[in-house]
Image (cartoon, rainbow, N blue to C red):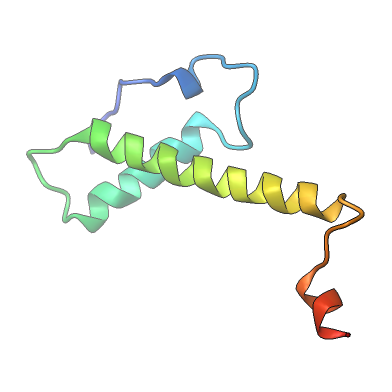
Length: 83
């Protein structure tokens, strides 16, 4: 197993860190490495960055959905089908 020692600004004590941990990034990056067939000429930074991007986009989507739920003018799909 390869050890990823690189950290990005996201994982370096950022007070606005999203709802995922460094462990989540590491786990997903490891999954990507496994999906590529566990190559010996590994590029762990690429898997790490890809995992960060995916987790960040999921967090952004979750935050948007949560903010929409609190918006009094937001119509859910169920609301639009009732008209």
